[in-house]
Image (cartoon, rainbow, N blue to C red; front, side, top):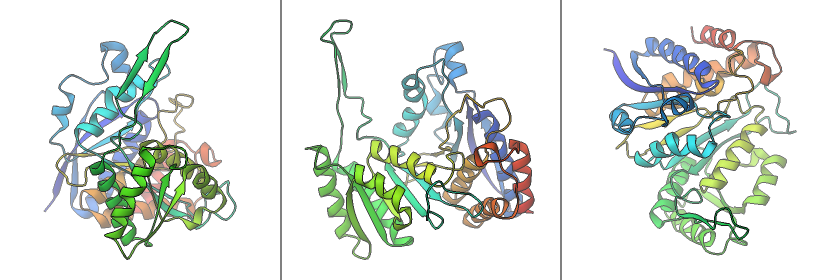
Amino acid sequence: MVTTHRIALIPGDGIGQEVTPAACRVLDAVGKRHGVAFSYDELDWSCARYTELGAMMPADGLDRIRHHDAVLLGAVGDPSVPDHVSLWGLLIPIRRTFRQYVNLRPVKVFEGVDSPVRGAELMDLVVVRENVEGEYSEVGGRFGTGFPEEMAVQESVFTRAGVTRVADYAFTLAGRRHGHVTSATKSNGIVHTMPFWDEVVAEVARSHPDVAWRSEHIDALCAKVVLDPVRFDVIVGSNLFGDILSDLTAAVAGSIGIAPSANINPERDFPSMFEPVHGSAPDISGRGIANPLGAIWTAALMLDHLGHREAAAEVEGAIAGVLAKTPIRTPDLGGTAKTGEFTTALLEHLS
């Protein structure tokens, strides 16, 4: 019997248009081996749509995808549209309306990929980023626009419910991994929100006695990730700190082109959204040289979330295999392979 999943497919902008088809090819191939099929509803939501119609997505866009099993997104962003317009016009409404409060970003150094950091070969960690509140709130505004005294105010919003649930997710995840959580903070300089974050994380830690944990100031933590990335298991951070750490750890792993992410609604009341970390990369878009591994690993995260753990493991194994056993590399990894060539090589490791 075949299980069919309905996927809202948003290729988006730039290289998103190139890596999304690669991810779908892999999903369809591994799905056939495991009795899983995918029905893709492709949507044109993008900066191109914004330029033409004045909106990243239609007014009823969220209702259109509310009942899908998952959302698979390529990338969003274009130099012609301000980043805050594209982000707040598409990704943030999806994340917040569908209560995708966990941003999950696994990071590892694969055999055959050189890290720019010595001793990082055994790095295998997960960044758990709070995804719907924190520093990326809508509270604030601008005053005196156009005058010398012009000012801007941006308020951070941390709730007990929000910090508790993301911390609990991180501790539960660490309990299934290597049993250690690092909490990113800055309570020595940010006087209200960060001490509150620390207090709530400590409360959550008491309900996970088998998981060791420590708190690290974000500046020192970034340095330690570079100097000794192998020491970390699960890192949990606020919206801003998790965002910074995600790109930093991906760079340590050798290329942001490999890095996946998942925007998770753990309760499954709404669809979760899966997107590679790399962004739209307008400097290389249209040249056919984008690394598809970030999108393909992201597809594996989606498989796992949908309950197909063995299929997800096969995809991740194929990623490891093509990197360890072949010289095929896209330019970001020091090679000359095209996106399609790299994808075909990976599909061969699935067969």
